Length: 315
Image (cartoon, rainbow, N blue to C red; front, side, top):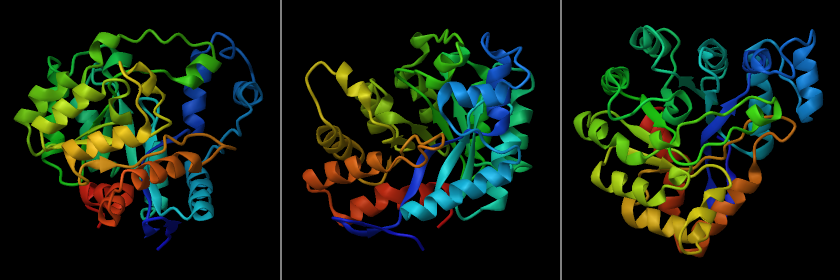
């Protein structure tokens, strides 16, 4: 069991938010790009444009690279998100090859035909654990879309599964790099749109990433009202600049702990591409923030891995 040395002792870390940028991910985005869509070597050009290392074709090879990266940082593993709709097989192959290191999640557009059957296949046939919804990106309401309601019901029937819902500010850096428009409908970004689903489907676990990404107050309201709502802490949390009064990460953690306790916070980094790899600086900042506010060792162990393992029923 890999552990990291921290002020809280040796912690086992299981990252709740990392992206699996597969070869198919880059194929999909470069095909849509006005800059790269007609390039015969679009993937190679994408690497040159971004300075990123393009992944191997075989997702199992990419999974092995991630496993080595986790070893290098003393990290047990991560929930990894297939980050374009239709890329479920890539992350499923990765999770099947490294079941102790990678749990599979998938970006999903419920507005497409046969959404319920596609989600059912992802969970039951491919063994994925978390369906990731981006209502602002795909232009639908969490409160009113019948396909979303069906998926919430489906997930509630599967212990160890969850619904991830991106709320608040949404910016996809790789889309900007490839010249792709981001015509997101930010009116669909409120965590409060999830309330009716979370209240009705109380067995369904919901995860809100990035502390609500600028909608922290609404995220705390939702989580306070619905004990089946979890919050991930991922990324640099630059959304704090939107707060009406200046705040910092220790303040945000203290407020979140006051509302949720230590049992429903999930540490994440938002790691995604190489050569950057696993973003250790996010881990360090969050450890330091929790240490500053006097969090307990028990809370730290829960946040940095135990909560996610319990949610996914891997422990």
